[in-house]
Structures are given as structure tokens and as C-alpha cells.
Image 1 (cartoon, helix red, strand yellow):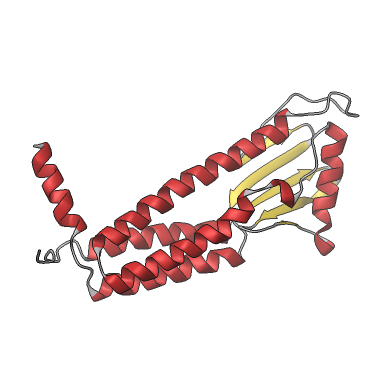
Image 2 (image 1 turned 135 degrees about the vertical axis):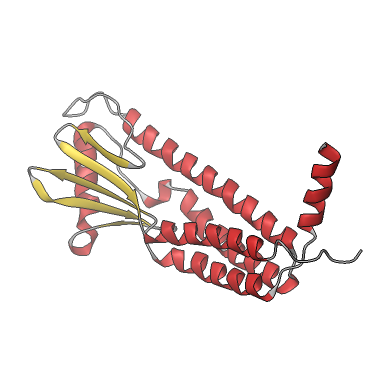
Amino acid sequence: MIADLLKREFKFLHLPLNFASRLILLLAAVAVAASVFFPLWRLRLIAPQYAEGLQLDIYAWKIQGGGLNGNDLTEINNLNHYIGMRPLHQADFTEMQVLPFMFGVFVLLALRAAVLGGMRFVVDLFMLAAWFGVFSIGSFYYRLYTYGHQLDPKAAMTIEPFTPLIFGTQQIANFTQSSYPQLGTYLLWVFMALLLVAMWCSRKEKAFAR
């Protein structure tokens, strides 16, 4: 039984890609390349004294505050200081030095799969992108955890340690914090979906002769 499963897997990995699959891979490359130019995630804080809210956009390569000239980031750091949380500095997010590079790798691998036309190249790319996605979300969560738990006990205001939500809405003191994915992340999901569609479209092709 295991031998038959391995044989089918081996046969699937050696299927060629048809024209439709290759075209879909080109679209996948465009999707992941475009994701660099849009926010991946957005955090918002709303309180009675900030009726319009404070906004923080996280890109693959930068953190950008909302408001005039990005002043929301400065205001958020002032609030963080008040509760003993260290300020948000882009230099602390080492992931932002890796994400644009990895997205470039995904583009190159998608183009490589489209040119060489082998199913195994698409499978390898999908597995790499899936692993990197899980790792990135885990790293993002850990970063939020450390920011919310390593609070200065001498701060002007003492609150219970907390973890800012990675997805959803919660109450922190008199602030309502929300965190949701944005267009950059949606484009990455489209990229992953297109890889699956590319594999599906060529699932009935005949294996390369060996």
C-alpha cells in the first residue's frame, strides 16, 4: 500500500505542466511581486480620546503609521511608553530584511517552474511558501507577545501583561485594538491558490518518458 502511494506520488511529481498551468504560474509570480507594494497587516487603536483611531500598517519591508506624515506611529509609541511597552522601531523587526528577499525567491521559482514545466517544481515552491508562511505568522505572534509581556514595572500606568491580537478585536484598558490582514496578504493567498490551480490543471497530463 505504501509502495503504491509512493509510486503515485513519484508519477505525479514527474508530470509536465500544460500551457494553462504555465500561464497561471506567471499570474502567481505577478501576485507575489505586487504584494510588496501593499500593507500585509493593519493594526488599529480606538479610544474616546482618539475617536478617529490610530493606525499602523505593516508592509513586507517597513512599518508605516497612519495620519498626517505617519504621525500615528509616534503617537502609538508615546502611548506604549506610558504603559511601559518599548517603542516600535523598524530596525527591531529583522523579518523585514528577509521578507522582500523571500518574495523575490518565490517570483523566480514560479518563473522557473513555468519555463521548465515540471510539476515537481510547483510542488516544491508550494511547500516552501507554506512553510515560510507558517514561520512568518509564528514570528509575528512571538513579536507581539514579547511587546505585550516585557513591560516596564516603573511605567506611569500599570496594566496586566497582554498579547496584542494577531487577528480580531480586543479591549486593552480603554483602547479597542483590532488587527486584520490587508491587500498584501490577500495577494499572497492568491499566489498560494494559483499554485494549487496550476497543479490541478495539469493533473491529467502524461508523465515524462524516462
